[in-house]
Image (tube, rainbow, N blue to C red):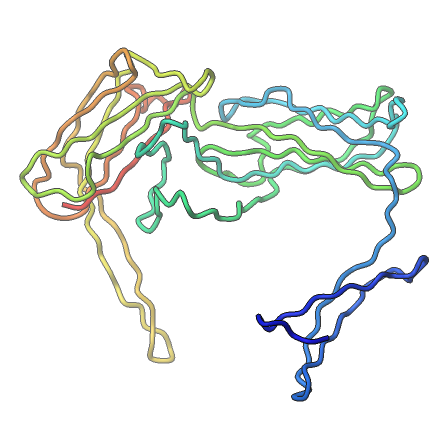
Length: 312
């Protein structure tokens, strides 16, 4: 094949009927240098599934700590239920970031990471999913199996809001394996607090304004009036230490120390909004933490913390 003006080529080959299954390799040799390149592809035989697996959560959204369940339904495509079918299931989780369409500059996350880019909307990272629950069972006479999801049984203890993925895999009598999944959003608390500073860099000794909003995730992102919020402002000190290794090199390790410089209480208006002003006493990094007024009461879920860092 000849290369085109862009140094590329394309072609195709039709595999014969009944061609062997397995791994195939395409090898290309560039003449006259004899440089060789290759790529592989898999050839498999398609077998139409005889049944489907549908996973339906009891509730699409819950507050973390609330026990819930998901129902696995295994049924044949001709309409009958698949009874006594073995099922293996997993519940996986990934971080979930609450952000209403109107959120703009508001941060609704309780993330204390100085290297995190809060507003990198253009960056789409791959979610890191981890298994948090596992089990197995057999479908009943109606082809159903119930997965109980209880946070007290989680294998690890993640923080923040989560997206839970209930995944079930059924094995039919003909050894055909079919999977299905459903999702549940587990919110960190019964409502969220959003924080937004009007600017990122200010001057020591000059007033600095912070806007807040309280919003309920149960409705259409409805604002919450008359919510009393506690706001704390910390000045962050950094301690950097160089840790030597045996080879004579090393790495830097940082530690932080937060010093409380201001505490205020605000109440959201009829639009669910509030604002406050504080004056940075000196230059440096500051961290703002907002909770609801009952945030120290651990007997019930509290509003999601929100933090925003700024420099002065």
